[in-house]
Image (cartoon, rainbow, N blue to C red):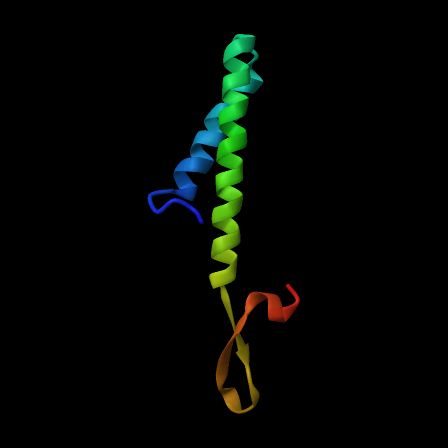
Length: 78
């Protein structure tokens, strides 16, 4: 289960910062490995959070007569 204080937005921003640092080529090897490890951990946490959010997503489906019902995202074959 994802952490309660976990923020996807902050994690994505941190992943972008790490990527920028690694792509710059200015980080020493030891620090690069530490940044890579941090990025892998963040990536895993983001994946867990996204999977939990996906389970909560509902899709409104138009029914005959203009009524709407909610169905799980996976039921739509998306």
